[in-house]
Length: 338
View 1 (cartoon, rainbow, N blue to C red):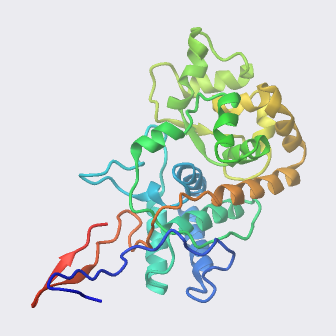
View 2 (cartoon, rainbow, N blue to C red):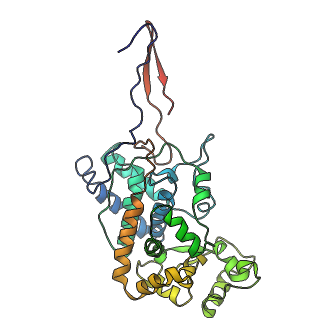
């Protein structure tokens, strides 16, 4: 009720954090073609540029590890907010944001304000794997989009390409992800490319020795030396494994043979606690696929519990709605701050 002469009656402007649990088929009634629309746009994007599949898939890792799977990664910077796109692990590295924009536009045309950007990342990542020859699986949906993003949070959490297996194990453990999850999810590097910037230290000054990483197979090192000469363009890219457009277990075979592109890749074979999984996956692709799917589902369950919304545009939060403020006999339209 409105009491006395000063009254402020406000309706909720964001969706409560106590949202229904994630579940398969979440949009079956509200947007029944949602998953078909996402896959169709992904298929067209990957035909146009095959590398976009790997790029979109990586968005899930970089989004979910920073305050849960909430689409915060997709927010552009504003005068009052430094987002995650320019964080150390993302700048000049993550790409294909425009593919997410295309998916969102198609979904908004079919089902306005229904499908979250956070769920788009989850569906599109799954589709990138399936369309590259990897496993397909049922995803749980129903996430809300964050109202903010933090470059600092991303910098504090996301690992460096120089990371070793021990530090990666500790990082994954913070999210209740096991050593098996770490190794299987690292198999996402079965597709895509990495930058010379990320491996120059391995080639010319590993651990400050002034020498190359001794674990790199000699012929492979010569190939990398040619691709990434000292003082060369750090943005030149190389394949993360020998079949960069096919999601398979070649990545693990390469690690066994000393041909991992990133230090954070090869360390999985040189470190005793992770070596067994690398060897098993190199010999059994089906086991890798099963464990990878399990890991993706577990990672997709990471949630911050913060308030959220369904963004109209994945790059910006929605404009706060106008509400009616009644003061005595006067009415005015005000903008609620989130």
